[in-house]
Length: 262
Ligand code: DAK
Image (cartoon, rainbow, N blue to C red; front, side, top):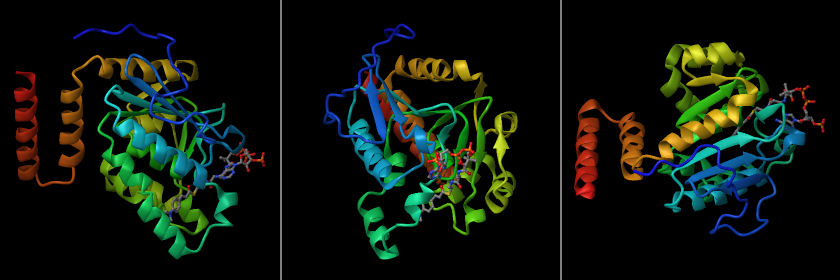
């Protein structure tokens, strides 16, 4: 398979299927190497996750999911200080009623949409990665962080539950003990500890963060996308199955890959 050169500066802001200027809170770019880049773009509010950002991400992920040209996706945060400092606390105070919020969530379930994206998702994380920020990172398949990264789930300190999946996704990655330590206390977890616990798979300097994420994305983009998607599916779906069911799934996917390559 053809290898594509590294660090080609060919990102464009206008993806074919997405309307121009549609996004207030997110920058979506894709290049001709099969890599898409999604930037959370509210640096003045440390990229706090707002209703608008939820809707923008919903549009972007829906488009990515059906775009076969895209082989890997990088998520990152704009600005120096944060990937995302969690849900927008100013907006929380003016939130619609619980019933209305539940109805909107059912219509635009961003978290399940994250789970359904077939391409590998790579989070490039720096600075504060709190609340919904860490929950977004946990929906990604790979997490690469710079040394200044600070993870945390401050929800319990605010009297709420991490309800964007954190209670489910974190234990799947870190196991019960380490997850409960963070979830029940709101304790922050910094770079080295995050790396040693497996919360991130690569820890790099701030200057190298995006480059490292691109290197990994390019590596993935150079492989057969059917095999990559099947491997992701086997692992992610298999995690919620018994070993027996997981082995069946693996066998089915391997057969599909073999017959597609003939
Ligand atoms: N929301 C809105 N604005 C924020 C923000 C946030 N989460 N975090 C920071 N900002 C804003 C600040 O207000 C400030 O704006 P100006 O005052 O300049 O206008 C600007 O960003 C810079 O922040 P700081 O001045 O505070 O910067 P520092 O370096 O001093 O401190 C910090 C950084 C990250 C330690 C601090 O900003 C902070 O503690 N931020 C709040 C962190 C937090 O508690 N986040 C919320 C986590 S809870 C659910 C779904 C999801 C969730 C819950 C329910 N359901 C479906 C039911 C999720 C909940 C969460 O994420």
